[in-house]
Image (cartoon, rainbow, N blue to C red; front, side, top):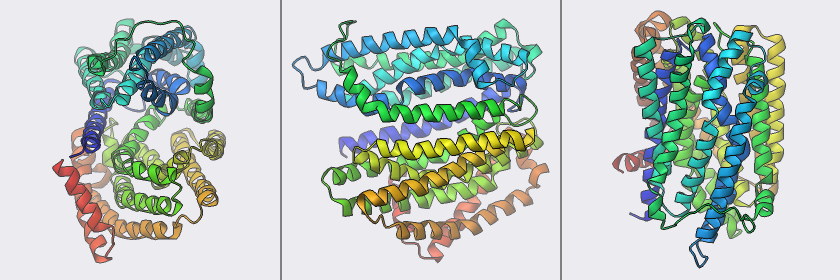
Length: 531
């Protein structure tokens, strides 16, 4: 097996384990916070989301798209890149320390920015959580810097598997919290010690995740020392290369701020920020396991063809990628929709709350297939070194997200706010895909859209009776008042049962309509299972 093949298997396996352990981590967290629609849960969701938002603004896209290629190029230097990487790491660490310090000073303002409609006591709790969570910015940054440097030196495993250690630490900490204090959903129940255990656990997981990578640094053969002589790092060049990517991330974060401010109206007892985050987590499981794991390998070949100017082969790669991903993602969309209530029960403390959660999840799922296709379309632009065009259609997408969020805020009742925002997100994904496909068509010619649209249509035809069979299982087991929604464990069992029945029907329907994608899909599953 080639080194690339081994790396792909290692990364794919790490992604699966990381997502599953992260899923369990979130379930334990929901239990500790008394459910998804509690005042404490929403306060913690805002506070723990701040480090991710700030870190995304300062680094997402910059490291993978710009810094890693420069580290690879630096390997050709006489010193193997030691001087360059020393300067880069010193600069990055200083920048992260400054941003972390400023963020902690501004913690009350950041909470106000994201949750302006929370009552004062809930904002105070979110701020207390934030003081413990914001140091994550530094360790997220160190994790990314060291991890991307390891990847650039062909050391792939640690960067992928380190988040699993984070999840284990978090599960243990949140579990200890439940043992010591029990589920706490009311603001009045939170003391400084309890806040420290909860938010400190979340930060400790990120700290360990970053420190684990340093154990593997000796394998790079580099001896890094602090170096404050930053001339030669190429800040101007980095800025030029990352400019459009940075603006895209900034647009997404602005849209996220607007959504969070609207959702802060649902401070408790209704689907709010915490429900939206958990519904998005469920949404991301099929996206990450299918789109990222199966779709990503196509881009090596696509990149080679784009670099050589072989547009016909690029167009063929696009069609193959979309159809291969589509045969899995269409099924995942349909089956997760019909299993939405038992799946939502994993993150809620009652069947009624699960039903409200499920509405939010289904609204997100409307955009899953468009986003899966968009993954291929957008990265094709990147293969042609075009980051400006994706920025342009991202402006449109962010504008729709912001507009629909504001409209939902003034037209929908509190209990439907989260669903309205999720629906707006899906609408934006659909419009963005249409515009992006049109722009790519103008760039490289006919994309064979009719062919892959017909393929997606075949999968939808096969998935419809499969979804009906899954829904029948849900109804026959008692529906909303049945055993699949009795508790979190049975919710998981019910979701698996619905999925298995639906999968059998789906495969049978694909065989019945003689879908040409069935055989390659089965072969792909067998290959992954063997590896």
